Amino acid sequence: MLTKTCLTGDAHVSSMKAILLAVWTINPEIVCASQFISSKLLPLNRDLVTQEEQDQEDEKSRREAMRDLVESWQDRLQLISVIVRLHLLCSYMRG
Picture 1 (cartoon, rainbow, N blue to C red):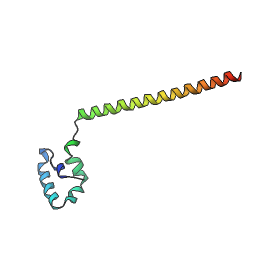
Picture 2: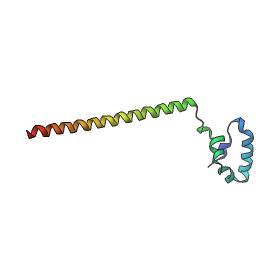
Picture 3: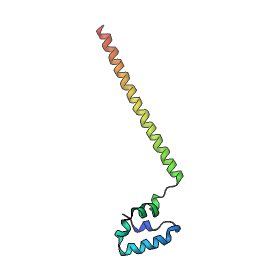
Picture 4: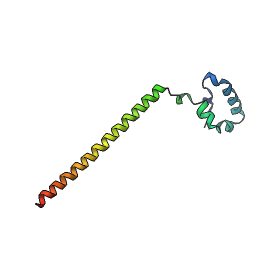
């Protein structure tokens, strides 16, 4: 839901903010109905992310995904090792 804090964005949208604030005071649902305005034109300040911050977050996600992938393959190799050992043990016991 769009709140009045969304209406405190950058100076280049100040006239739009004034219009939205006027509409907000008359009927908040009109402003809330516009996802384009709330998500594209006037995001909350905490939603503003620099490219550097996005790059850092992407790098963190990439490292985490790589770690998960390595752990998954280590688990598979360990399972294969157990299966091979059991097969060799069974073969040895048979004969």
